[in-house]
Length: 280
Image 1 (cartoon, one colour):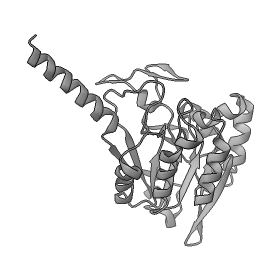
Image 2: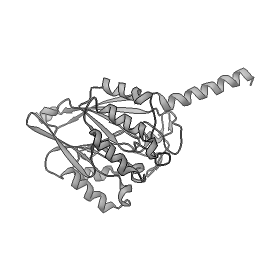
Image 3: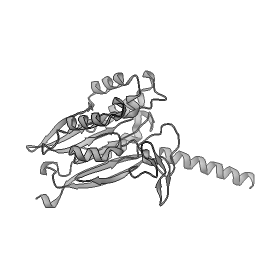
Image 4: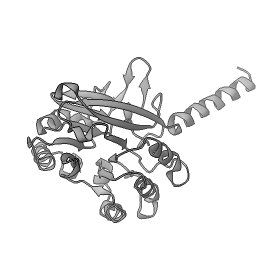
């Protein structure tokens, strides 16, 4: 191989590497639910997940322009805003800039991920977020009202906060979702592999991240590996169902231990909630 060809190959690989890590993709979903209140038909949620301190332009402007264009009614952040390996009190700006900018367009709801659970300065980060107006949902929920009807947005802590104890996970879910009270519940959580528990809790729709889409994806085969699920995992990205519960798994925005995505660009998710015709 000549020097020119080798140079072109290296340049092409570098460009592909940059594109895979930095070119944002937007996934647009319309999900239908029989139990959705009529007043919330068309309610639009934008999900952001797994930033891991990544910067997309000055003041996160590349993400924020996309979020604004999606016209959200709510913005939901499903954990790992920061990366435990490379965050200090002086390097929280990327996470806080994203939150501050997002608040210009819609209310922002947030649940922490496993990296926040392992980050000693998380209480400081949480105070900063709350001070700017982010709703931090730790095993709790808020009710939104429209036209005399209600929708719940709930959030549950990542299992890393309590040593992965299964009983504690279910207690937190029941506390957050108000099990079986009949109110349509949008649950924010970080981990997709808890889908069966989310279904037992009675959540109608769950937004999660954590899996990074498998980080590496093989065309026509799918994701290679996800923590807590192993090789060729079933819950790495996209829409899945268990009982009456629908889960959306974001591929996320940033990277953690390994700094490269392959066939798996950073993702913003928009979900439009619609009322199923059979419920009329």
